Length: 113
Length: 112
Image 1 (cartoon, helix red, strand yellow):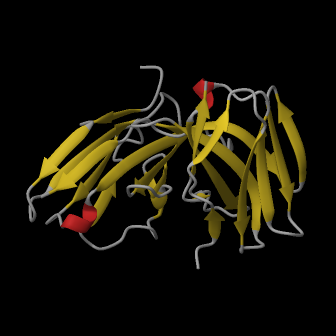
Image 2: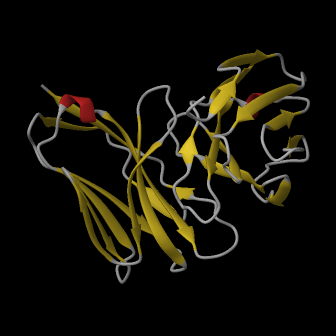
């Protein structure tokens, strides 16, 4: 596709359930970012990949959050034992190396009940 | 206190008005400044990008950065109803960590 694709668009999880969110970046984009956006707030950085290497995971809020990008393309953000405070929109963005313009996907809206 | 502060609004203006959106920040290491537009239930899209201080104009949009005051602005001329969205300022430092720090966003409503 032409843009960053995220799936699912919406996810409802019961508290304690594990979830996996997928991001398909723009083809050829080396850099990939995950952000978390709470209602009425700006996105907050979670983690950053350059190709398959996770260079920065300082924004992950707890060890229940895990991200991977094994082949340097598609990325998955996994949240274990979901809690209500994990309810948010999870945004993925990608960019070419050395280019500050990051293109965002539409996000996955996670609701934990 | 957050690193980047932005008035959440909502800001309501009549069509054709000049809109001024602003952010202040506390981290003097920020070098790159961006404005994103986010429509409801969509991802942010980049509107303007500025490096260091100065002005940049693109069509109806003008971005200003004043690093001495740690203050950035986005002006929208001849505002249109289609400009109704949330506007997010974002910044980054010049390091290997290229993540963006966002403001909380200002919701703009342009009334026809």
